[in-house]
Image (cartoon, rainbow, N blue to C red):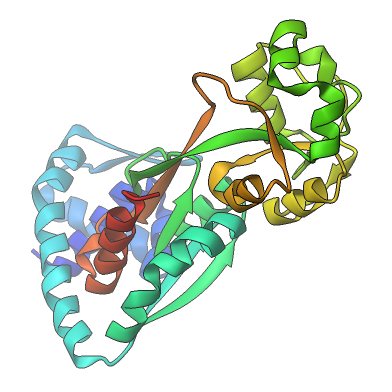
Length: 298
């Protein structure tokens, strides 16, 4: 049986779409359709049910994918390992949120540069990054959303703790954690909000988890980078909810103050996502393993 047909079949099975599989394989959609039909003729069985928005594997298709995918991935690993040894540099296309990538992921991967790894980064929101990964634009993506389906595989990377912070003068006006605990979240109403988006994603999540409430006001300042949010808070613009790793230095120096230290702080999980099967490529596997190992100390 033609390995090229099986490779196309496994890609379609993981992608759930002839169109997406064609983009990943560098083929036209008619070529992918033709190859799947040829394989179905050889087997005498349909492998996919066709729908307007994609395909669903038949029982035979699922069984075949379960049998052949591990072997195709192993062959890819063998051939790419040879290429990796012959090449002085392999390029990793890394996607992730700008702050986490800059503060965590890129510094962690720096030692691999001396081993011949070249890195290209792309920043974006979770959905955008996962779509780019599925389309083959990235090799590895750090994301706060766990992908669904068989095309992408995600591994939990780390949890980040969220902290409610403000400049000392605002903390003094609020009256400190004791007053906030006694009188409730409404004591924060006079304090302007600083966020990354009009929907208040971090503040709304914190308010829901800690106060069982919704924010009472819209943001006074919207800055699309969490580092800019921190700078605004340090300057006295208002309060914000930020990952602890990003504001630890400002907390230690007294530039900002934690307005509350709840017994169970809100957490957000980061995932390390790849296209299924690509961990057979040595440079992707090496970066993946390195990030997971480093993240233990985050």
